[in-house]
Length: 315
Image 1 (spheres, rainbow, N blue to C red):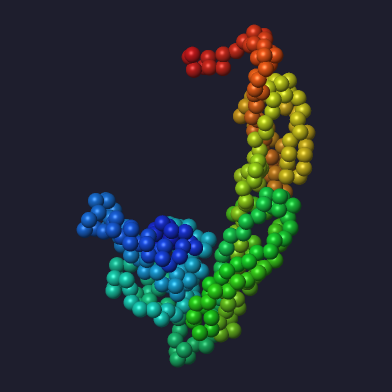
Image 2 (spheres, one colour; image 1 turned 90 degrees about the horizontal axis):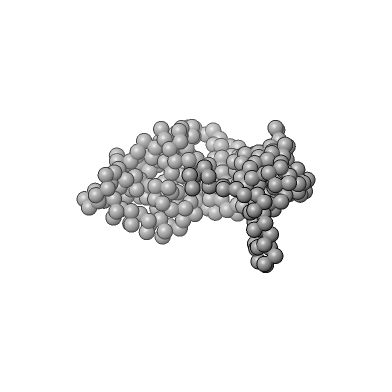
């Protein structure tokens, strides 16, 4: 079956308040109500909204859903966890009946809002493992290049031994491996959800995200850089200094280089296996003609080097 991102369906961020979720539902429910909406998919959207709101309006069901949803994308293939251990004490469904909800909803919450777990008197006494949990960690490109460590504070919602939702702040010192790429995950064993009845704790997965850099941009293991050069540096093929994550290097420009031309610095990207390269895109900066002398120089250049850069356009 396909995974459903209830936050995306509702059009709200994952940290939205309960009041924001309620407002979003009311607005969209009016828009897609089958009795008044002229949208072609109104009935389907209205049903989706009701299902999403059923989960997100209830703090317990929302907490349970968040532990499964972290790191997943809307529409991707989804198989329910083998042990779904949450027990909800809330009331019935928003519309009084779960038969209109999807198989995805039923696989997580069932048709009675009670999770699929052994009852205390069933004779089952085995341990229950804690849920794996997911979060993003933001690092600089310099940290990705050199490695290091970062202290992160995570606010985690989980169930205590009595099945109640609690918020817990956890501070962790995370080692950043040298050469890590965006999208890769750091696994912290035993730092996820708490196990029950003697079960092991789940793992915590931190997905790497890069903070924006003022001139570098990562594309996998490669690092892109737009390098400003003067017209004479480009035309004469001079050697210019260019920054890299590992420090400054000298770069020999090809003669008659053009704006948009790309040069490759082998091995100057992220130091993973294999290491990435730095891709330098040339951007020619034209000096302003602010003085009569400068304007005269430009006229002499036009006479000495006549060119029509629009000839290929027929003009």
